[in-house]
Length: 223
Image 1: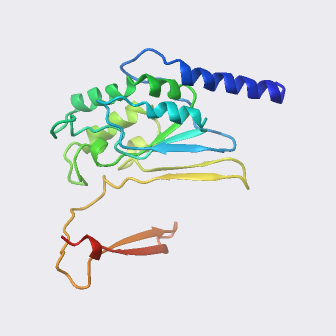
Image 2: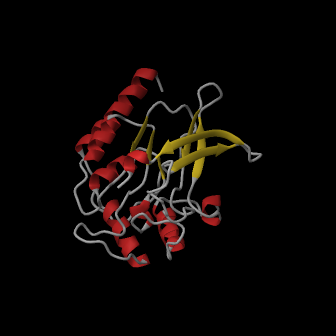
Image 3: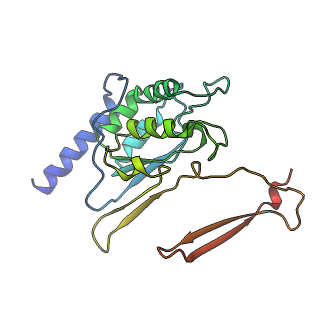
């Protein structure tokens, strides 16, 4: 296809996204495969309240991303807009279905590949961590929603962390999705301690050696 015709076809497709939305559905099927070539533009977002309208997806479509990354709180699985509650498999599935029914999201989903991780609310417990009783259920519903293949290693290993590399050598982009819920211990902080408590962020190489370390003082957050 000539370059000018290809550009015109792309422009018409994205114009259609901005003006025409498909009918609501209870679930999203046929997620697009992740990019295989050069990734020029990545859109990302979080904190999507499934009980509210989400016109932001129209703005996402307008920038024509090659990939969208959900960063967490993609639904609020432990809150209904008025009060918190303890989720169940059924409530998780119902809340993800509400997100799937957003016509603007459906339109973007037709043209853009997605990656996703979670935070506390789509995990299912406010400030929750390793102690969350139904985290395995939450994980299964999460991965089912985003169409994770049944043979994916994300299905069998703990947590939902992931990492992908896109593009050829010299033009590569790596996307690393952290899981800051599944493995997290209790938040037992001694705010009276001197010196002030710290958060220690580390990255290790394949041999387990510390490749990077950053310390963040919590002094400014003392009650």
